[in-house]
Image (cartoon, rainbow, N blue to C red):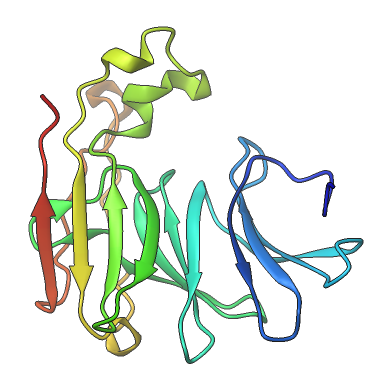
Amino acid sequence: MVFARNLDTPEGPVALTDGSWLVVEGGQETGRVTQISPDGLNKRMVARTGGPNGLVVDRAGFIWVADCKIPSLLRVTLDGRMETIATACGNEAFLFPNDLCFGPDGALYLTDSGFLMDDFAPGGQIREDYMNVEMDGRLYRMDRPSELPAAPHERRAERPAALGPQPRRRPELPRRAVLLQHRAR
């Protein structure tokens, strides 16, 4: 049985207490959090993100989204307010955050495949040899994520086009984060 149709690359279904569902739609042109009615017939966009790949809802009702287009951890409300909470763990910039859950200890756990989207799908097209992309998978742990402040908005100076794209900065995450890392062999 198909419960809901016309979703663009759906991931991370989460059941809400009112019987509705949340999914992320990670399609190239979509990039959003979608709420689906309890009967599966209606849907509404909660928030447009970038490249959402996973979501979880905490006890306070915040929606936590792993976004891989602009590698980040987002906090979203059902009324569509969205904050970027983190783009890194300490000095480790997120590369391809994808799945997340809350552990029995109350911490938020976030996986990262350990490669950049542009390495996996240059220009939005998945490489034929995608299995050969060098991966450096990670598992992050963040204590009490509901207490984390939103990441400060970064100001970037304009970079002359002749120098290529702006280099990636590595913003700091509040100190309550820990990195667990596994290197693929």
